[in-house]
Length: 230
Image (cartoon, rainbow, N blue to C red):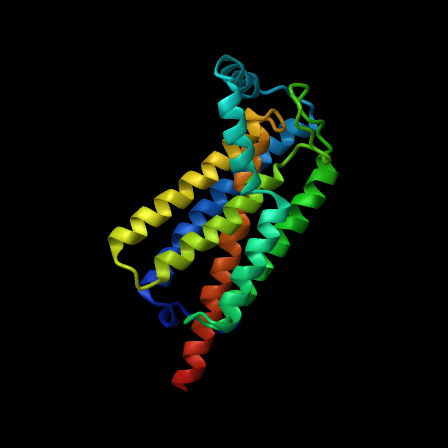
């Protein structure tokens, strides 16, 4: 039994592969996040944080800064809330998918927001001294832009993957979404509002939560198929 009466035999091959990959990524994300978290609690200095800022200082230009501001906005609260509401309405009322997908999307976005907020409060890491003219109002670890971006854009990747688009379009669109996620994280380091380790932790947190929500949705679908077959 997998979950509340769901058996392995009820799952499609694609769902089983997704669950296995999800378990591997979830385990790895949790382990690396805990390693980073332990270092933060012990007030450790991470060499990679300084190296990342060194790269920024060496390559800083006004053009790159303007571009970083624009990219960073695509991971901001204002953008995410608006885009999430629009996507939730589509998934709940207009999409060809089960309405449960819209429900789990809202859970994923609301959940990652609450998790990030609580973890920021728990770790209370100060923002980098290298802030420029861009100031963060909350603690630094983990990055909310990163955790939110990987859940939102990651959910879009999942939607595209399960859609009926041809493989070429799927690869192209998903590659662009992955690039956006990475650029959002990079922009936060470039603007000096987060350490590299904040971004890494945000990505790991978001990935773990995304996997949990998608897994829960897949199991819910299995229950639906099983009830319909009875």
